[in-house]
Length: 194
Image (cartoon, rainbow, N blue to C red; front, side, top):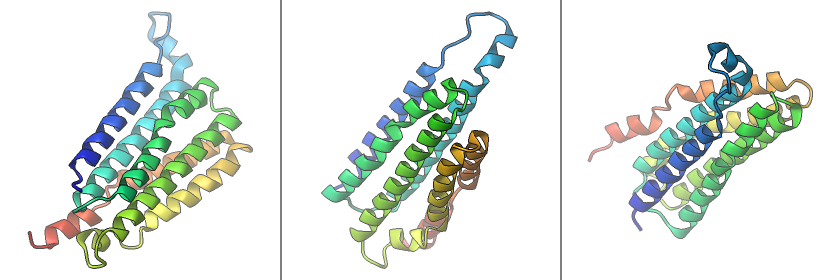
């Protein structure tokens, strides 16, 4: 089975998720710039989630670039990832609307850890569908950042009930870790003969 439909479907779903998130932002009633001050929690949670979705989209694109075929298991693993990503607008709105209260901040972490685990599962299902010496296997390596991200999310969930802003700082830390592009797949694809 080819990968084109999987990639196109995933791109479409992520685009819809981003659209839903921005439609959740309601402009202030007042026409003064100062009126945006009361929206800072909503805007902050939107920016964090937009960056997270951008990171998932970017990494998903690179991952599928190294894939030569997909199976039914890959389709289900990809849907599992998309399930968690579709929950991001909900927890984003809840977290921003509550001005970063403990439970919504923890719920945001649960969704992030779910998405991180789902991405990990997708990678490993893809690896199982490719030879051990494939471009994909060479590019993935030990996936240190992926494992560390899940640990940071777990710590942030617990921290959310004590210091929600510190938990948000950990979510931002994970984003910052991934903003530096992971060049493994690009590097391996460039080194392999066509």
